[in-house]
Length: 396
Image (cartoon, rainbow, N blue to C red; front, top):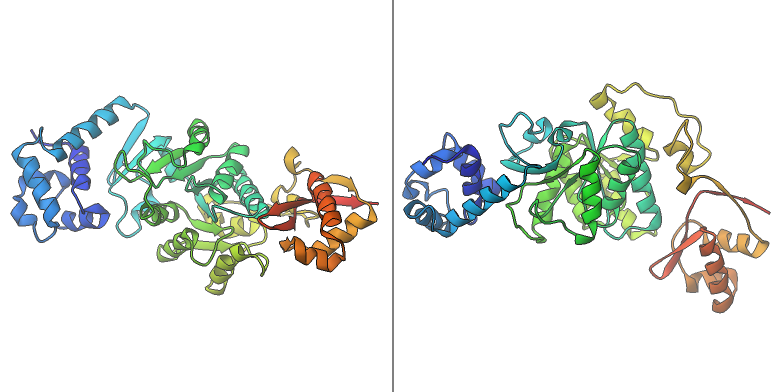
């Protein structure tokens, strides 16, 4: 019995050591994936690894009882049992156009949620899994602003910047797309199950190219990153070390001839160095979300809105509207020692011992004052250091 295009594609991608590169190499010799079972394995030996040739031989000899045949049967049964799961082949009308343009695009996309959301104008937001408080806040606010202006926010469902970006879009009641480094049936990290469901419920989508049941492996995530950049008109890197997956995503974006944006940071923040490296290499330095809208406006036929001179970080991220309650400007009363401590702290992360040298305070008194400022929301601890946070107005 001939295989459907979906079944043939699933079978081909299940062959050992084939992957996306092997798929497209085979397709250069075959008219379609279904032709695979009509070609003698020996004729494909120059394109397939020995393990794949043997697996194909076993399947052709025993389609129902072979390991490959059992996996295909299980895949098709799972797909049949999941009416909310979409399988988009490369020639499907819902397959996103921008993703088709990248070299060796995914032959098959598994999608939960709204597959039409994959064709919306998108901004990818990526960064560290362990960001500073300010970095996570920037990711959420930029995502909120862009989502309000019609962009879907695309990221990787990871901890840190990815999660903040997804939540920012959700808070704006916008759409967000999570590209997974696992099979579509495995949420990673597991603590993001609720976040994944929120993404689906608000009209976004979860996306994976990996076979069903694929667990999280380090090698999957660079491959996943090319989809994040491939779906998007531009990629924003919020915080990233020099050697990081975020810079891989940015590299793919450059290869795909897409825009790359980076938020600069303190020279003392190791998570800013990746952004600074990108800026030196030609990425666009951005200070406000409007900087990105201006460059990607063509994706939306966006009519530029004038932004008033910002008074606060919250003002330029939420122009002409009331900021969310979580970042509304507060008026906080400080005594002189607290003001002096904030001035000594500056705007870079600073270890307690160095802060003690600057202020001349003993560690006990300094720690007590820092706790007071932390309670007021003016500083936060990042590792062994403290950093200022929040947009507030200080009065005597």
